[in-house]
Figure 1 (tube, rainbow, N blue to C red):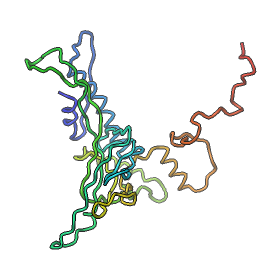
Figure 2 (cartoon, rainbow, N blue to C red):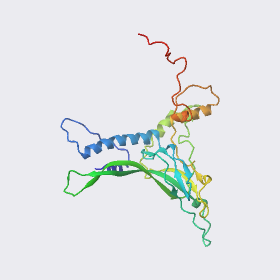
Figure 3 (cartoon, one colour):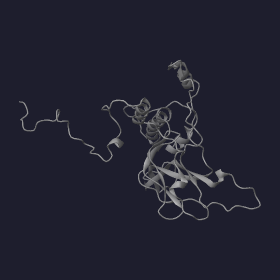
Figure 4 (cartoon, one colour):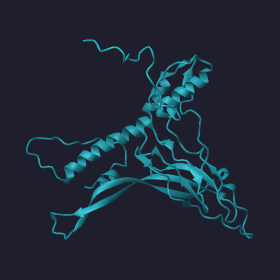
Length: 281
């Protein structure tokens, strides 16, 4: 059973996991090595999907290409709806966006959503690095086989305009009489156990189609329809903003807080070691 087959098999409801039990003299073959990988990947993807959520982690901006009627996606990372990590290490090649169809005078005008397409990013696995096969296990003359699986991505353009992100709470009675309604929270967790969605891709932007062959402008791209993942640092920022003016305090945070600053600040004078004095014996 290959890793791809196992991935497709586990796309149903929540399932239990199987891991290797090692003992002296155990024969380790392809099945058991893949069992190890599928166990670790499956557990991580389950936690991503159930605990962290899905959406863009950072980057993945959609910008007009320097030339032509196309867009590029900047480097970044995301977690798809199935809990799998998507990493874009460098800006993508220009992705061509089709032209807006000419209006047909014999037909009624097209609705506004027909003037749009939306761009999504999807998790993909690609077999690569072929090597010679030294053992023929089934009598098949196989000269080479892929020795690794690269975790990649693909971009997809779909007709239509996606709606805005729903910002209403899924637990409307979260607060009751000025106190946390714990019963409502328990019921919201207990009553629903989300299944694996049929489409795991993450939408990145709505793109309005300019007339004719005009190039796409920044004003034609709407990235506000993308889901994002709320990190702990972002949640703390939101709470501080809603709480109003609070005294400044020292706290941890992500590396984005140090952009443009020294990532290794000097020690505070009160705690910096005095290099003039010899260390105690």
